[in-house]
Length: 325
Image (tube, rainbow, N blue to C red; front, side):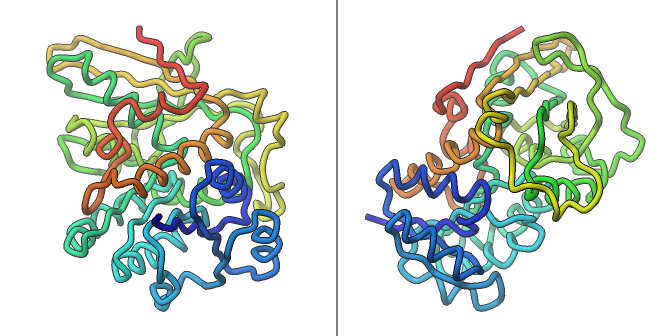
């Protein structure tokens, strides 16, 4: 049996994923930079652990591993060294980021990864699994898809790690895909989308779907929007935020996304996907993706969840429902 390595396993989402992997009976190890926290979690789960940093020598710490699943954000600091370490070591790389530059990097490294028989598969969490699957689903309802709009609803409070990642996303600026090219669109305007309870205003933002949507559907024009409700986007010193929402808070806020696709003749198709809370969904989807990669479902080079697992992957996670309009 091949071995999975969960990097960043002692973080908020990483710990839930490690517990899920144990429940699923996967052969896995945990890794990160904090020896004390790793040893404590490893003892609780009765699994081996490795302590190493995301630097130029990371590949030396990957012996015996088939798949690395990265939970250590912000991914602007961990994705590139771990992707390059995986390419050097000949193992597949997965992560859960929403940070647009991570996807652009994986796309750029795709040919090099393929030459080493390695897959780079970012985005096996709530972003981008549900939206990637939904885009493929809606695209099948349109004869000649021309433009794809994706809107995400972010309810409830945000984890410290997510808040730090969002800072990276905002720092990347507002981008859109125009005629197949990823371009800066600083003048992009908000739009209203209906997640099932009436139209709400959504702001343009740059998530990984600008890359995955293009590779999964081939639609040349893509824009991403987000609706923020409650205290989802925190202010002040982000390092002082709690690890993440409690179980009760997660249960109170399901997650939703809308995909709208316009046909070349102007016809419009829309669908909404609803899942359990994104923080609950991510460890379920990420561990399931890793399990399937370990069993041989993989492509060489840069890939998207829908490319590898098919458009129905999001719905394979319990509590997921798609509604067409």
